[in-house]
Amino acid sequence: MSTATQRLPLRLAAIYLAIASSGIPAQTPSRLLTVEVVNVPVSMLAAQVADATGRKIVVAANVHGQVSLKPGAPVTAGQLYAAFLGVLKASGYALEERDGMLLVGAKP
Image (cartoon, rainbow, N blue to C red):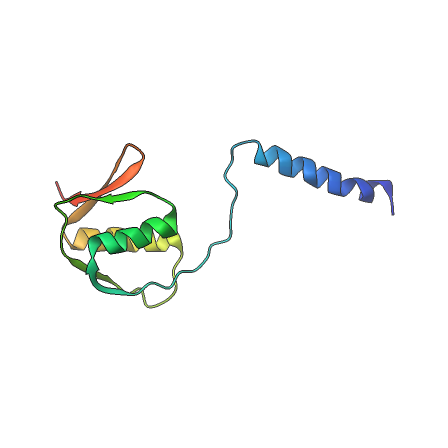
């Protein structure tokens, strides 16, 4: 084995350590989610979206009602989030970012 080939694992390790210590979040492959909810409370769908996206979503106490979301095919977390925004808008609710969390409330 050549000297250059022997050093490759060390170089890869150095690159990995540089990225890991840089604070740049690691990229993970998009996983597909199967979501089909029918007539569930807004808070239940919000909890599923929060789990899929890793974001904290709080539903205001004055948010009531049932929502449905049936994408028809597996979706990415980003697609689920976009569909969630559409469901909220169609149901008369809005999503606002406040203090690092997302708050579901009535449209202003």
